[in-house]
Amino acid sequence: MHRKLIRPLFPWLILLPLLILLLYSLTASLRAPISPSPRPKKISASLTCDLFKGQWNRDPNRRPIYDETCPFHRNAWNCLRNQRDNMGSINSWKWVPQTCDLPQIDPFRFLDLMRNRNIGFVGDSLNENFVTSFLCSLRVADLGAKKWKRKGAWKGAYFPNFNVTVAYHRAVLLAKYKWQPKYSASGDQSQSEGVYRVDVDIPADDWANITNFYDVLVFNTGHWWGYDKFPKETPLVFYRAGRPILPALEMLDGLKLVLKHMVSHIQKEIPRKTIKFWRLQSPRHFYGGEWNQNGSCLFNEPLQESQTFGLIQATMG
Image 1 (tube, rainbow, N blue to C red):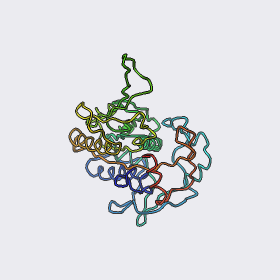
Image 2: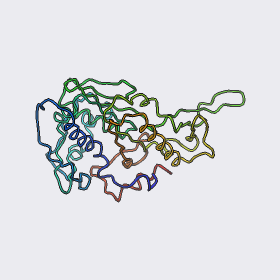
Image 3: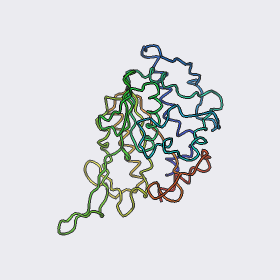
Image 4: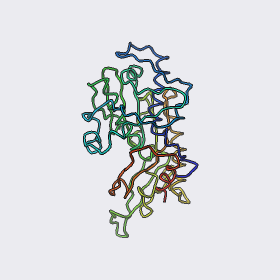
C-alpha cells in the first residue's frame, strides 16, 4: 500500500475494533439505563489512557475464553479444532499498554452494556476474522446465541438474553463492483477476458440497506486493492455516475476516489447517532505463496514495526 495511506502501526491495528467497541460500550452505559450485570466487574482501562502505546507480552497462563465448539467458525478456519501447531504459544500473547491496565474482555459486562443495540462490520476478511472471534467470545455469556444472516449480512449472531445483534457484511472494495466480460465481434461473451467494473459512487449491495439498523459500524478495506486480486490482465475499471472515468485511473487513485465517495455516502445516509469507526489495514504475512497458492503463516510471535511496511507494500506490485 502507498506510504501515505498505510503506516506500519501493526502492534495496535488488530486490537482497534475491540478497544473502540469497549470504549463505546462504556460511554453508552452513561446514556441509557441498563439492568444489573450477571457478573459485574470493574473495568480498569481509563478513557484517558493511550491504549495503543505498549508492547506484546507472553503470558503462559493466558487461554481463549471460548473453545473449539463455537458454531461461528468456518470448519477449515477453526484452529482449535484442527489442532494447529503452536496454538498454545500463539494464544499466550497479550497486549500490555505502557501506562494502564487492559483486562480481557468480559462478555457478560460487554453485552449488558450494549443491551438492545446492534453492532455491524463492513469490509473484507480482516473484519470477518475479527467478527468470528468476537462472536465466539460473546457467546460465552449467552449460549442461546443464534446465527443471524439478515439485511445482507455474510455472517452474524443474535444474543437473545441481551437483545444484541453483531454481524459482518462482506464488501471487499466497499463500492459496488462486478465482472464485465469482453464480447467478440460476433457477440460471443468471453469467460476469461474482460474487466471488473467499479462504481465508485455506489455502495456494495451487501451493506447498501443497513443505514438505520446498526448503532455501531466498523468499516475497512485494503487487501483486495492489489494486483494479486485483480491482475492487470483483468483490471479494475472505474465508473462514476454510470460512465467510465477518463482518463482511466490507476488502482491506488481508484481506491482514494472510492473512499471519498463512501465517506460521503456514510455521512449522508447513516444517522448521526450511529457510532462509526474506520479500521486500518494489517500487514500480509504469507510465505511460499498467496493464501490460495499454498502460502503459509509461519509466525509464532508478533511482527515488529520494522517488518510490516514491506509486507503491506508487496500486493501493489
